[in-house]
Image (cartoon, rainbow, N blue to C red):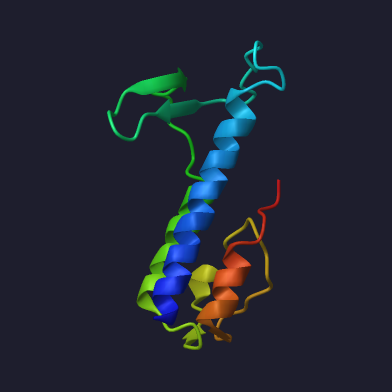
Length: 123
């Protein structure tokens, strides 16, 4: 029951994040003016029909960025107990972005790793 609530919460958070990005990049403050999209690539697709509503460099390969963090977070919640201790492998100590100071052999709860993973990345 608890994990279903967390899973639903993450889905709602993911939807709100995407909705916020959509609103911020697609619409101007004035309803008559279209905003310049100040990102290298973007695509908006109608989920029901699959029709592309807007695209900018849609075929250009781009790094996954925060989508990777969100997908990894979902997998963590679906496959681990939040109080489960996870030992940090050596491969995880050199990864950049959000830095939480993990060292090889540290034992950290899945909940703490989840929170750390969702911190904003360095720019």
